[in-house]
Image (tube, rainbow over all chains, first blue to last red; front, side, top):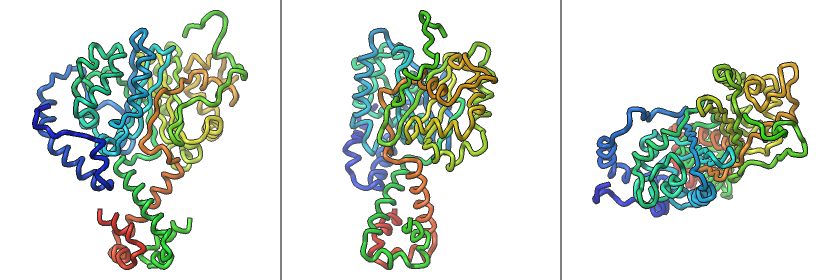
Length: 229
Length: 197
């Protein structure tokens, strides 16, 4: 990434304030880096077998299932790195959720720890999902730390960080599109955060001594009905 | 599927049943069951899971709220020799599977179970009981090492209420009288702030 690409610190961005304020910041960051990202993507030599269109979609949400082979003797080390990945600030900061649209992630070992299944659901498109997941070396290192324990990871690791495009190719090679995908709610993460903010605001209104009077206006009937629940 | 020694891990044994598998994040639990597709049954299982998933009501909020199902993903892998059953749900395992199988009927699940080696001891005339089915789903299950959800404390029922509130709020802000009413009482300030976003 060129030196003038903006620094991206998701943890700091998440401290900005409200959902709307964080979204403003994430949109500015995405706009600022879009040209550099587009150039990088255009210059990368993707293999002929690469497809950005894998995964079934429900509403706005796409599923991702990847089946890997664990390097012999590496299962325990891989588990340790995944546990660190799960709790990392870079994975859980609100700005990451808003930027990448990551809805869920699950990692499961099977066949006596010889294979590893990595699942995720996200509501952006594939390219921005990966580009925004690993925008700097900080995030790429977190990924490299667990990828290095997979046979498909080749020689990627802390001393040979994969780029975002390397990760796209690596992930797609192990990916299988689901045959059936059913999701009860297909909202985006952004929409869900707004809904959560709305609930918190509505609860504040209901706690106000003048709530009943305030909600009695005929135009607010849809909200008054829910207040009764 | 190879069978080690003389013990068949898929032979029903209630003593070996473990109901508490799955890694929970907040209120959301996960199941990932890994099956082997019977040789020659690859095309049939592809067709039958589609029929299974298209069961009337299967994709409705009413059914998903009853069983607490957030997502269900069915995937063939390893050149269609393996089948992954993956669900995220917010009830406990026993009520989840009892409600799911109970609502659909064992015959409906048999559509795809019949193509799996793990269900090889059973047939159309000798389908597994609920207890046997729960056992087989769990024998093939592996508990996740990591499980993270963006909103782990919301059940399907909570999300449905959230949706209702959202839709009600949109009605209000899209009504000129509603937008005006939000400005008229200071008690409504928290909602007015959001309407501005």
